[in-house]
Amino acid sequence: MTLRIDKPPFLVAVDVVAAVLALYLVVRPTIRRTLAGLLAAAVGAGIGWLATWLLIDVLDVFGVALTPVTRMWAVLAFAGIGLAVANLFRSRWWRKLVAVLSIPVFVVMAAAGINVDFGEYRDLNDALGVVPYPALSFHSERGEVADIGTDYASTWTAPASVPAKGAIGTVRIPATESGFAARKAVVYLPPAALTPKPPVLPVLYAFSGQPGAPADVFTAGRIGQTMDAFAATHHGIAPIVVAADQLGGPGRNPMCVDSAKFGNSATYLLKDVPSWIKAHFRVSSDPAAWSVFGYSQGATCAVQFLTGHPTIFGSALASSSELGPTLGDRASTVQSGFGGSVTAFEDAQPAHLMTTHAPYENSMLILGVGQNDAKYTSFARTLDADATQAGIRTRLLISPGTAHDWNTVRYTLRNGFPLIAAHLGLTQ
Image (cartoon, rainbow, N blue to C red):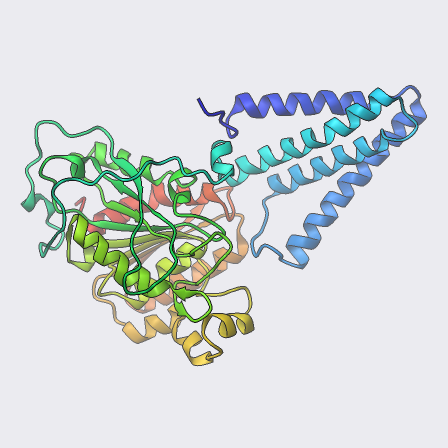
């Protein structure tokens, strides 16, 4: 059984060990040395606070805000390291040894606490990027596109026995037309799709953030559990979820557009992936039956695709979206992503796309954002206003007590997917 690093047994154990080590390092033979150790811890805490303030609030290195909880863990780690360093001087060899060994413990303690706050890694496999899913097993009956709108019941009579849960697996979706160097996709097949004669089903794209990988929406986002919970109360019916690779690598950001530098990401996602889906599964051809979900960079892609391609996607669920495709600043984005063309850059922005395609006939956009994520909350409100003006039905979800993290993603899925499901025709 894989050790869960996001659950109390591990977290409590690490915190207890760190506390014992800190107490040992604080207590010195003399009051003067004890006070010196406490002063070193205070200096370390100050350095930790200064580092987070400089990197996040001043330089905005990561482009996202940190919650008070994450800042607290960073400060505690620096405080522990400062205390350990103080014990390396004028001390016995065994105290020096304990001080050296305590440093990684303090780092692990902080990392574990920050991980819980971000809600990303369940275990070490997740942290190391190990994909826990086998190769996808295809059903014998596949490749039928139906022009039925969202009336899925008309194509299917539920058998006496439907699997309790869906299946998740990896598959290589060929970049036939785009030539995009995509990693393997991760696909979820709902219980109904695993029956001998599956119904026509809707499709839900799912995009991770950047850096990231297709499996992230399943491991950190837990979209498979969300779909299984929905299917359990809807006769095994839920969308086929396709987490295709929109990045081509964890450190790359093609912005879901075609570019000379990053490759034809848009063509891959808008032509190669749909062609593969239609060749392998029974799906509806109606745009209302196609939706796209994403987090952060993936959320931006979701908004781009909904607003720019209403004949392909009828709805989108976006958690912490940017205003549009970006590499962090306008100049580098225009140069690297759009070959230096300001016009191409501006044409790819959702605000422009919404003006171009308005009024939308049957589109829905659900925007989720963390309560403590001021920058992305501002983005979400702007997108919400623009979409409403363009005739897109919208809803803004604020995740209480979270920021730019996977806890916000899961909140957005729990509360936003029922709205998407209704638009997909899965509920009344």
